[in-house]
Length: 151
Image (cartoon, rainbow, N blue to C red):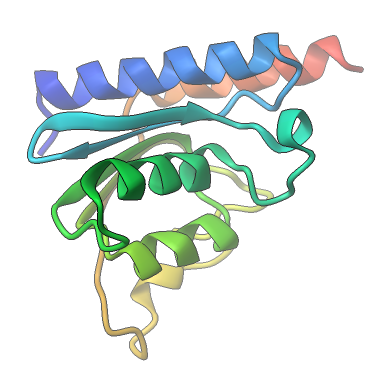
């Protein structure tokens, strides 16, 4: 169930997405919390870092793991402005996050429910609770404005 705290963390993820857009990055933002405390926040950095894996989710997972001193983030919630891709969904499984909350679906690459349903694969030994559509309109608008400006 989404509450005011979840909305607040998603708003922080949207701030990260807007900052990424200002850097010329695709506007995706992520915030990671453990026990209700923000331990990491990031925006896309693929161009900035010249790193195809520097998606907001992966950057936030790396930062959070360092902050808590463990590669397993068992009680973590990851807030992301757009549906994660296959790489990011895989990283979430490896980190063993407990919960994913995301904004807009990604019809061209989403790996949670749009193109793939990675978390539902019965062969996996970890399950992630997913809530979609949180502040989806705002997240989609950031992407739409970003790509319209480049056409």
